[in-house]
Length: 160
Image (tube, rainbow, N blue to C red; front, side, top):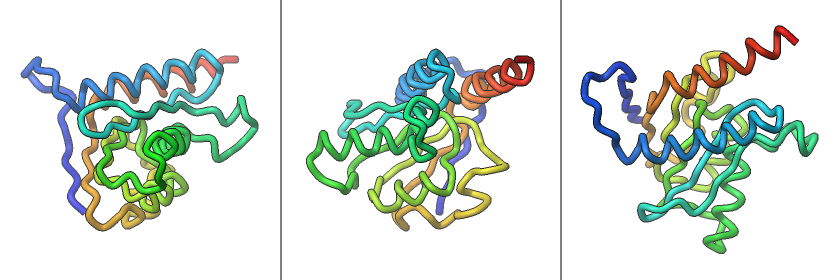
């Protein structure tokens, strides 16, 4: 499974489409933060435009499955009136967990782009083959911004 890693310390100040869409996922993560949720956000892009958005709602819905990716996948499937998202890209601020990776695989999402890695619970450690075999993965897009948002959330949580 090919993974493209992006350096967040690039000297080139260009904004790629991946960074643009990851910024939209970060907006979703900030919505989660305002609700007291773990700040993770996701967007689904099809043919160059956002068709679905989602952010963590596990506390709000008292549902451990209400992860940002699943919220966005459900919304995208409803928008497209079909369960397969074969021509779509999922942008998510944190590396998907095993549960989300399974859903992403079943939805047959063509491309997955994530920001910060999750060495403790991420798919790459526990289920590296969960995605569709033809899926392309890009990691580390706006990694520092995504990681800093999560780190500050957990730092504040530990203080309180």
